[in-house]
Amino acid sequence: MLTRLETFYDSIPRTGSRAEDFGPLTLFVREGAGWPYYARPTLGHTGEVPVAAVERVRARQRELGVPEAFEWVAEVTPGLRAAVEETGLPVHEHPLMVLEPDEERRLPRPEGVVIRVVEPADPALESALAAQCAAFGAPLAPDAVAATAARIEAGLTRLVAAVDANGTALAAGQLQSAGPVTEVVGIGTRPAARRRGLGLAVTAALVEDARARGAETIFLSATDASVARLYARLGFRTIATALIAEA
Image (cartoon, rainbow, N blue to C red; front, side):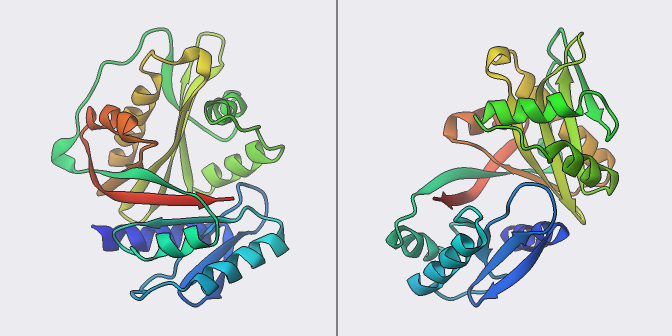
């Protein structure tokens, strides 16, 4: 399973970036509009990652004016954490969870909203992205709507939102797929709409959509152990630890 996910992690950024080779590390550099990418272990690398390699990547990221960010799976590249921390970057742990076909469970849909797929020309697209940004305390980038619409149009992204009677999205999340593997990403609820089960309902709808489109493996990274317990209600189970470091 982890080998399958590593292949996914390597292929997804390549749909919107160029890959720069730093030996044991690969830096993905965004080309065009959208969120900046990160560096991660080079696919197939099995040895240690020297501190010097991390420093070279960070220097390149500073040169490009992009976040000094790294993402990897602890169990696949266990030595990278010490190298990253030695350069001064804090590392955050996130439960890496997979949903197997026989574990999928359905939950009641919350009242007062419609849980639906958001298409490129949907008026709710901007508020759906704004809900995700609000959930994580980030501003909505000026080019985010156009960039996301283009990815949806190209079949690279699926977006589901919980939309209220006024047509405003209160929560949203996305899918990104590579072959039979699909990741659930960016599940977020506006702070004022929390504790209504909207995020979990959006996740469930994304899972249904992914299954309908032939996904064999569906996974996500939870914020922390408490959020992981919520996803466990849908049948997700923790198999590893996703690590994220960012200046």
